[in-house]
Image 1 (cartoon, protein in one colour):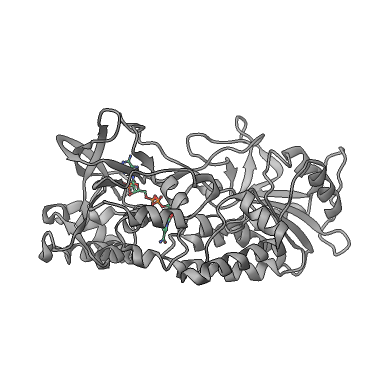
Image 2 (cartoon, rainbow, N blue to C red):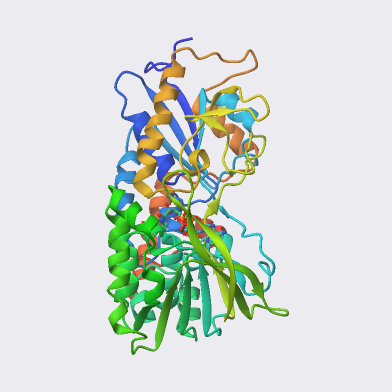
Amino acid sequence: MTVGTPQDPLRVAIFGSGPAGFYAAEELLRQTGVSVTLDLYDRLPTPYGLVRGGVAPDHENIKAVIKIYERTAKRPGFRFLGNVSFGEQITRAEVLAHYHQALFCTGAKSDRRMGISGEDLPNSHPATIFVGWYNGHPDFIGETFDLSAERVAVIGNGNVAMDVARILAAPTAELAKTDIADYALKALEKSRVREIFLLGRRGPAQAAFTNPEIRELCELEGVDLVVHPGELELDPASEAFLAASKDPVHRRNVDILKAQIPKGDGSHGRKIRARFCVSPVEVTGAGRVQGLRLERNRLEGDGKGGAKAVGTGVYEEIGVELVFRSIGYKGVGLPDMPFDERAGIIPNAEGRVLDKPAGQVVPRLYVAGWIKRGPSGVIGTNKPDAIATVAHMLADAKTLALPASPFDPAPGAVDALLRAKGAVAISFADWKRLDQAEVARGKPLGKPREKFTTVAQMLEELRSS
Ligand code: NAP
């Protein structure tokens, strides 16, 4: 059948309004040869996914990308349906009965497990939860973190680990000027944290963080980034890797760290101790975290031009009272959708969803972003990723086979369904009212915004304003 005319536009549902969802929406709506109308769903009343709930509050400039998404939201054919959960207020069967195609951009909202003893002791947390907490994400506002701890470990060398270490170490007077959740700011103001161990299992040449993020830690007011000179000495394989690498980021990371050597332990009250080639093998403690047992690693070729960490059988213990495990996000499955538990993604062939055992393409279902490829890359990485999936969607739309079962793509039909199921869908205009109210709440506090942190608060604001 032919869809994509102004009379019979291609109707698409997108689930997840983070970067991948918005980039896909833009790509679909900017087409000139095909008419598309789409509904961009989010389970929260607020859009933007990790740009709102993940990007650190002191990285306001990164959030400027929202302006691009706002332009997409103004395009004809765009609707935002916030506060609607896939699998609850709208099922897979209902989606397929009301849209020609559905695209899942639901990200990776859980965390990877380390699989070590003591991982779940009280005061050992996934970094993802801490991030959601300080960003006022409704899922995490009830969390508590024992910031009476003086010594803290942040496990992992990615940019999330950088964010967590920085938020723990930064002067709260600086954080007070950001959109950090008020309860998090109050808790951090009382924090007694003075020593943060940043633990990389491989060497400085292999670290996943990027130059601005490690540099920020070096430049934090009142904080020393302390390195072990011996751990910055590169083995021949790391030297060869740096020499061969076309991307200067790794070499610069090493240079930035080496530049810290002359200051030794420094003179400030707070220390971030960057350690390399150490793997936590046990979180120790009785009833709560008291330490971490670390195994020293050496690096060995991984057969793919990189290096892997191999335990040496040499151990040390560090005393810490709080642990943040920052070893990567992990996707979670969606109701009635195929899921690859091990990889934490919806199985797919370049964005076309595959059913699990047979690996056959499931018609009309697609993925983009972290739920497609796993939790890697920066915000902008999701643009080409989403565009690639949309290319397949548009190609498939030319030979769309719809089921014989009832199919009604009229927007009014899905609205009626959502109403009948008791959903209170939040439009983009509603969101903009919330947005303005948040900005107004932030103004007297000198913050760019004071977020609403519960769905009830958001709905109440919309009812009363
Ligand atoms: P990531 O970049 O994948 O880093 C994960 C880190 O955990 C790596 O250092 C990894 O070491 C380590 N790790 C994994 N398993 C481990 C284990 N069992 N024991 C010890 N260490 C382990 O993940 P992320 O930090 O969660 O960030 C996710 C993505 O968001 C990244 O692409 C990141 O750049 C992006 N992000 C960007 C920003 C920004 O631009 N400012 C901010 C936040 C996040 P190996 O390398 O040895 O595997």
